[in-house]
Image 1 (tube, one colour):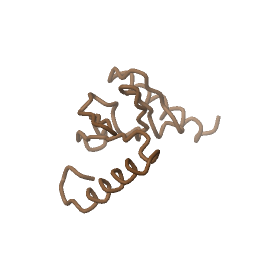
Image 2 (cartoon, rainbow, N blue to C red):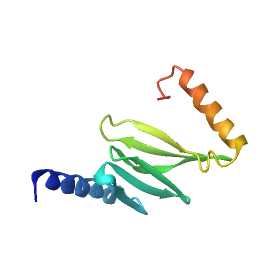
Image 3 (cartoon, helix red, strand yellow):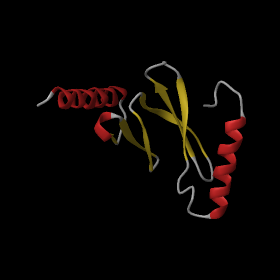
Length: 112
């Protein structure tokens, strides 16, 4: 194997170890170890491998689920919102777009 292939395998193993250590259920490493897939309440989250597995459910609403994860690089807790089928109908698509536009205009440390 070439060095590049060995590095990819090592990254995948490290990401899998983080998942196992955190006790995450129904998770898998994807895209060469760059992303980890988690299943939480039937919702699949594809998040960067820099985020430690979702710790717990923060909340859920009519069209979204929010979970908590920790950024391994900054050690900060973050909320990740998953909007299921956001563009399946025009009402949900407009709500999603409106929320994204509003959040982009907010200047707050908790909104990225």
